[in-house]
Image 1 (spheres, one colour):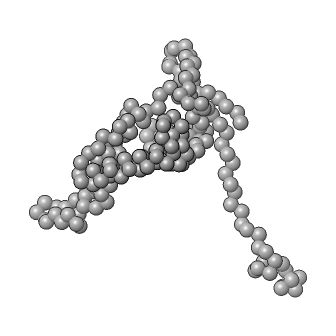
Image 2 (image 1 turned 135 degrees about the vertical axis):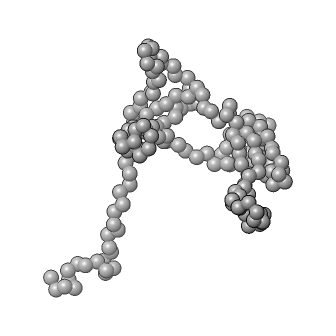
Image 3 (image 1 turned 90 degrees about the horizontal axis):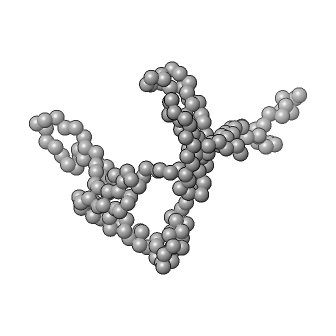
Length: 178
């Protein structure tokens, strides 16, 4: 796998190479080409970077990592986190806003249909899809001090037609007398 660090250059300035990694590995990306349909590059083919190489850390593994740096075991961490989210959901369901630490703010939201002035607004009919909305903390969700690593795109899996098994409708030519 070839890797190349992305460098940011300001016009008219010398190139500044500053690599500060926040974690053990850089954010991986691949360059892809797309044809723009809107904006100043409309109709042009451009390159964009897309994140890749991402892995999902499941809840159990996450709690295990938290437990290693605390006096709690994994089950206790799971229980506390699940209970905290359950309580926060109940508070938001009552119409209140919850400041959920560094993650941000949880608040109730819903979709409302537009009703012409003068018509009766029916709550059951015109308000739908109540949800808990997370307004993420900019400080927490803005990644700073990260590095980037360009990787090669994985070849796409080709869709091949399955080979018919003998006597499963495959035309061998015998039925035609060939």
